[in-house]
Image (cartoon, rainbow, N blue to C red):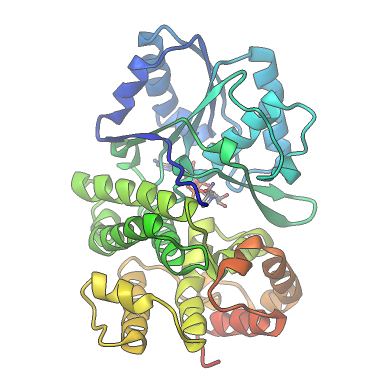
Length: 387
Ligand code: NAD
C-alpha cells in the first residue's frame, strides 16, 4: 500500500489573494530578512488583515537553516500561540517553518530526530501554509524538512507525513525579481528532483507523470527565466514545475545526486540547487553504467534521440550539460572555485556524509564508499564517469 500526498495547491500569478479567504485568528510567518526587504512579508500581512487575521514575523532564517534557528522560531510561536504557521521564502524558510511548527506542538521533541515513525499529532494548535519564492525545492508540496546540524557540519533530511503543508500558495509574481544565479541554481534543483523521482527505486505510476511534466517544463522555460527574468510566462511555468517536481519526489524519493549534493552543501557551503544539480549528470552516467535505468523514457518524452536506453541516457546527459551551459551553471567542483587542496582535505567528510544520507539508498545503482570517492573525484575534475 502506498499513499499519494498533496497539499491543496493554489497557483497562478494572483494566488496570494487566496490568503484573504482563509479562516483563523493569528498567523506566525517564518521567513528571512530579504522577504521583509522585498515587501513580500507586508503583502502577506495585508492579505491576512483582509481576512481579519493578525500576524507576527520571525525573519531570521538563514540559507540551510540550523537546528538552533528552528528552536528560536518555535519559542516565539509558543509565546504568540498562532493557529496558522506560514513559511514564506525559499526552501530554507519553508523547511524552518515546518520544523518549528512541529516543535511548537511538541516542545519535548528533538528536531534532529523528526521521523515518519513517531506520532506528533500536529494540527491540534495550528495548520501550515507554504508560500515559495524560489522555483526550486518544492518544499511546499513535500513532508520533508532539511535542517543543518552546524556542530556536525551535516545536513539532515528529516520528515513525517504530518509535516505536509495544508495549503501551498504558488504565486509566480514573487519570483519575478529572482537574480539569474538563484534562478539557475534553483531551476537545476527542479530538474534533479524530477529526474531522480522518475528513476529512483520508489518510483510509481502516480509520481511518474508529474516528474515527466516537470522535466519538460524546465528544459523549455529555464533558459528564458534565466536570461529574461521579467518574462512572466517563463516564471509562471518554472514556478509550476517546481511544485510539480515536489509532488513527484514527495511521493516517490530521490537518489544519489541528493546524497552527494547534501554532503557538498554542508561541507563546502555550496547552495543546495548548485550542489545537487552539479552531480546529476555524473550520477546518471554512473547509474546508466549499471544498466536498467529509465533515462531513455525521459529522453523520449522531451523529444531527444532515444532509440534505446543507452542512446536515450547519453542524449539526456548531453541535454543537461547543454542546459547547464545556457544558464552558466558550474559542471565541475573545480569550476565552483574550490581549490584542489581544500577538496582533498574535505573528501573523507564528503564521502562519509554521502554514505550516511538516506537518499543514497533510493538510487537505482548503489554507490559503495569507493564509488562515492571516485564520483566526487571525477566531478571535481569534470570527467565523464567510466565505471
Ligand atoms: P534558500 O531558501 O536558501 O534561499 C536562497 C537565497 O535566495 C536566500 O538568500 C533568499 O533570501 C533568496 N531568495 C528567496 N526568494 C527570493 C526572491 N524571490 N528574490 C530574491 N531572492 C530570493 O534557497 P532554496 O534553494 O529555495 O532552498 C534551499 C533549502 O531547501 C536547502 O536547505 C535545501 O536542503 C532545502 N530543500 C528542501 C526540500 C524539501 O522538500 N523540504 C527539497 C529540496 C531542498
